[in-house]
Image (cartoon, rainbow, N blue to C red; front, side, top):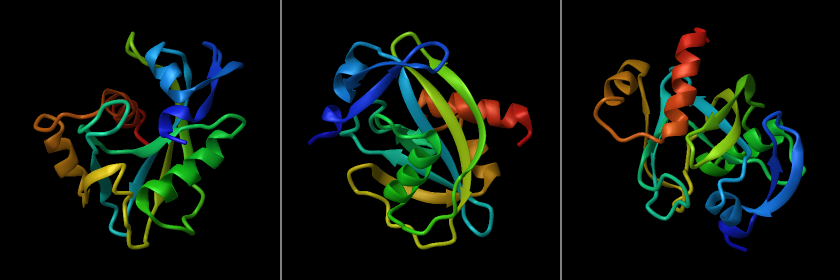
Length: 168
Protein backbone atom coordinates (compact mmCIF):
# COMPACT_ATOMS: atom_id res chain seq x y z
CA UNK A 1 0.00 0.00 0.00
CA UNK A 2 1.33 3.45 -0.89
CA UNK A 3 0.79 6.60 1.22
CA UNK A 4 -1.78 7.73 -1.37
CA UNK A 5 -3.84 4.59 -0.61
CA UNK A 6 -4.03 5.16 3.16
CA UNK A 7 -7.65 5.66 4.25
CA UNK A 8 -8.40 8.90 6.12
CA UNK A 9 -11.43 10.16 7.98
CA UNK A 10 -12.96 13.10 6.15
CA UNK A 11 -14.26 15.73 8.56
CA UNK A 12 -16.45 18.82 8.47
CA UNK A 13 -15.80 22.36 9.72
CA UNK A 14 -16.49 21.15 13.28
CA UNK A 15 -13.99 18.26 13.03
CA UNK A 16 -16.81 15.69 12.94
CA UNK A 17 -16.28 12.61 10.74
CA UNK A 18 -18.49 12.67 7.64
CA UNK A 19 -16.84 9.90 5.59
CA UNK A 20 -13.62 8.22 4.52
CA UNK A 21 -11.37 8.47 1.46
CA UNK A 22 -7.91 7.42 0.32
CA UNK A 23 -5.26 10.05 1.09
CA UNK A 24 -4.50 10.65 -2.61
CA UNK A 25 -8.16 11.35 -3.35
CA UNK A 26 -8.52 13.53 -0.24
CA UNK A 27 -5.55 15.66 -1.36
CA UNK A 28 -6.64 15.81 -5.02
CA UNK A 29 -10.20 16.86 -4.13
CA UNK A 30 -9.28 19.14 -1.23
CA UNK A 31 -11.22 17.05 1.27
CA UNK A 32 -10.82 18.15 4.90
CA UNK A 33 -9.10 15.58 7.13
CA UNK A 34 -6.99 15.47 10.30
CA UNK A 35 -3.26 15.94 10.93
CA UNK A 36 -0.95 15.95 13.93
CA UNK A 37 2.02 18.35 14.15
CA UNK A 38 4.71 17.67 16.74
CA UNK A 39 7.38 20.17 17.77
CA UNK A 40 10.38 18.10 18.85
CA UNK A 41 13.01 19.49 21.20
CA UNK A 42 16.20 17.71 22.25
CA UNK A 43 17.70 17.75 25.76
CA UNK A 44 19.25 21.18 25.08
CA UNK A 45 15.91 22.63 23.93
CA UNK A 46 16.92 22.79 20.26
CA UNK A 47 14.15 22.20 17.72
CA UNK A 48 14.17 19.38 15.16
CA UNK A 49 14.03 20.98 11.71
CA UNK A 50 14.00 19.04 8.46
CA UNK A 51 13.59 19.31 4.72
CA UNK A 52 10.95 17.02 3.28
CA UNK A 53 11.87 14.65 0.47
CA UNK A 54 10.99 15.49 -3.12
CA UNK A 55 8.61 12.51 -3.26
CA UNK A 56 6.15 13.80 -0.62
CA UNK A 57 2.53 14.11 -1.87
CA UNK A 58 2.14 17.58 -0.35
CA UNK A 59 4.78 20.32 0.00
CA UNK A 60 7.72 18.29 -1.39
CA UNK A 61 11.27 19.52 -0.67
CA UNK A 62 10.14 22.26 1.73
CA UNK A 63 11.44 22.81 5.26
CA UNK A 64 9.39 22.07 8.37
CA UNK A 65 9.82 22.69 12.10
CA UNK A 66 7.25 20.01 12.97
CA UNK A 67 7.18 16.28 12.38
CA UNK A 68 3.84 14.65 11.92
CA UNK A 69 1.29 13.65 9.39
CA UNK A 70 -2.22 12.49 8.79
CA UNK A 71 -4.44 10.89 11.40
CA UNK A 72 -5.62 7.50 10.15
CA UNK A 73 -9.23 6.36 10.06
CA UNK A 74 -10.47 5.81 13.61
CA UNK A 75 -7.15 6.96 15.12
CA UNK A 76 -7.05 9.62 17.84
CA UNK A 77 -4.95 12.76 17.48
CA UNK A 78 -2.91 11.68 20.53
CA UNK A 79 -2.15 8.23 19.08
CA UNK A 80 -1.26 9.74 15.69
CA UNK A 81 1.07 12.28 17.31
CA UNK A 82 3.09 9.59 19.08
CA UNK A 83 3.08 7.24 16.07
CA UNK A 84 4.09 9.96 13.61
CA UNK A 85 6.84 11.36 15.86
CA UNK A 86 8.39 7.94 16.43
CA UNK A 87 8.12 6.98 12.75
CA UNK A 88 9.52 10.20 11.37
CA UNK A 89 12.34 10.45 13.93
CA UNK A 90 13.14 6.73 13.67
CA UNK A 91 12.91 6.15 17.43
CA UNK A 92 10.79 4.18 19.86
CA UNK A 93 9.98 4.93 23.47
CA UNK A 94 9.25 8.66 23.17
CA UNK A 95 7.24 10.19 25.98
CA UNK A 96 3.65 10.96 25.03
CA UNK A 97 3.55 14.28 23.14
CA UNK A 98 1.86 17.10 25.06
CA UNK A 99 -1.15 18.66 23.27
CA UNK A 100 -0.84 22.44 22.83
CA UNK A 101 -3.74 23.56 20.62
CA UNK A 102 -5.81 22.66 17.55
CA UNK A 103 -6.67 24.81 14.54
CA UNK A 104 -8.19 24.52 11.09
CA UNK A 105 -5.60 24.97 8.34
CA UNK A 106 -7.20 25.96 5.03
CA UNK A 107 -5.31 27.58 2.16
CA UNK A 108 -8.06 27.16 -0.44
CA UNK A 109 -6.37 24.07 -1.93
CA UNK A 110 -5.71 22.01 1.22
CA UNK A 111 -7.77 21.84 4.40
CA UNK A 112 -7.13 19.90 7.58
CA UNK A 113 -7.73 20.08 11.30
CA UNK A 114 -4.30 20.37 12.86
CA UNK A 115 -3.57 19.22 16.40
CA UNK A 116 -0.26 20.69 17.58
CA UNK A 117 1.90 18.92 20.18
CA UNK A 118 5.33 19.17 21.74
CA UNK A 119 7.67 16.38 22.83
CA UNK A 120 11.21 16.13 24.18
CA UNK A 121 13.39 13.59 22.40
CA UNK A 122 16.58 12.64 24.18
CA UNK A 123 17.15 9.59 21.98
CA UNK A 124 19.47 9.47 18.95
CA UNK A 125 17.28 10.10 15.89
CA UNK A 126 17.36 8.12 12.65
CA UNK A 127 14.82 9.94 10.44
CA UNK A 128 12.93 8.02 7.77
CA UNK A 129 14.81 8.37 4.47
CA UNK A 130 11.52 8.44 2.52
CA UNK A 131 10.25 11.36 4.64
CA UNK A 132 13.32 13.42 5.57
CA UNK A 133 16.00 14.62 3.13
CA UNK A 134 17.97 16.67 5.69
CA UNK A 135 17.64 17.37 9.41
CA UNK A 136 19.25 19.11 12.37
CA UNK A 137 18.35 20.33 15.84
CA UNK A 138 18.49 24.13 15.64
CA UNK A 139 18.43 26.73 18.40
CA UNK A 140 15.15 28.65 18.28
CA UNK A 141 16.99 31.86 17.31
CA UNK A 142 18.50 30.17 14.26
CA UNK A 143 15.12 28.71 13.26
CA UNK A 144 13.64 32.23 13.45
CA UNK A 145 16.49 33.56 11.28
CA UNK A 146 15.93 30.82 8.69
CA UNK A 147 12.23 31.66 8.33
CA UNK A 148 13.14 34.38 5.83
CA UNK A 149 15.80 32.33 4.05
CA UNK A 150 14.32 28.86 3.49
CA UNK A 151 11.07 27.81 1.85
CA UNK A 152 8.82 26.38 4.58
CA UNK A 153 5.65 24.29 4.49
CA UNK A 154 2.74 26.75 4.79
CA UNK A 155 0.79 24.69 7.34
CA UNK A 156 3.88 24.46 9.57
CA UNK A 157 4.39 28.21 9.30
CA UNK A 158 0.76 28.76 10.29
CA UNK A 159 1.19 26.47 13.32
CA UNK A 160 4.52 28.12 14.24
CA UNK A 161 2.94 31.59 14.11
CA UNK A 162 0.05 30.48 16.35
CA UNK A 163 2.53 28.88 18.75
CA UNK A 164 4.61 32.09 18.94
CA UNK A 165 1.48 34.23 19.44
CA UNK A 166 0.22 31.96 22.22
CA UNK A 167 3.47 32.29 24.19
CA UNK A 168 3.65 28.53 24.76
